[in-house]
Image 1: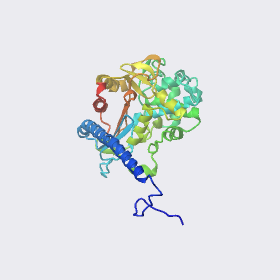
Image 2 (image 1 turned 60 degrees about the vertical axis):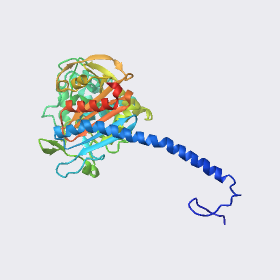
Image 3 (image 1 turned 90 degrees about the horizontal axis):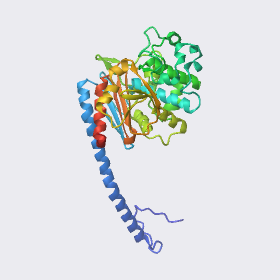
Image 4 (image 1 turned 135 degrees about the vertical axis):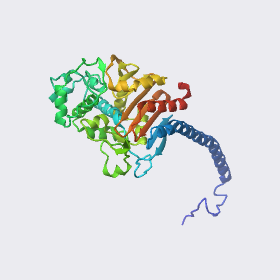
Length: 408
């Protein structure tokens, strides 16, 4: 029987069997000492960075919670490829369940960026072109005024002054089609931007029709699963309901209610870590499969200059460094509710430094996402109260400035 031994026993080993044993152990000891010497400062640096990020986030977020009586928030930051997640308060005032990394929030119109990514995927896989007209995929709309707009116009809110919301009487799929068939534009396509849920909703519907899949199935299969976003949903499954936060409006617990083309315009629920994964994919495109990489890149192309920002399909973008005044102006109530002149520009891929962002709200939730690829920084802010957009912009701007001092 062969002899067995362990480094952790007192079994003696004849020295003639291992004549260089002492030298080997000495070299190993020296190597381990060098490794420890190198890793110890790195560990301290990581701890210092964690503390720096925590301090910057706390300084901006804690006052928001108090000022706007926000029950709970989850804030995620990516910096140089490393994620940081911070949670505050409760997901439910009634149960006092704390917000955790697993808490699901409604993200409102940030959902539009996911819809735009799905459209980009349809383009990348040859199923659709941004120059196509919606009637190509939705035959019921052929010959109508809306069919004079292109898919690009729908995705950039420049189809001809579609309203922010559908009229109250539009509730069914048939009513949606009837509404678009009867709609009369104010402007020719491409002249003005008017932020619109119906516009983005039809944009997503056309993509799903082009792909031959129900919208929800296409989104979950190609985008959520493709990005390994396992805690992101349009319809929250039963087993995840305990993690679904309650939103608050006028002290009442609320959640989003179904509406026409709601899945495309404001239907996504997700966690801070999952949404940060999406931001990280937008910052660092390499490593993704080609269609998904091309889809995300498509959302970062600018098509219309709508001062002070450039409108793409999904993301709104600004040259960076950017002033807080420009960010506040580009995310103002006026930009959301009013017709704005739009100037077509040559498609601009984000080759220079850009600040990308999107706000989102439902009746009881408020979200904001921003990132600067050239600085390798991004931020996700999720809250279960729809507090004012300017407060979101101010907080995110402060955090980014604190963590990237050379951007001031």
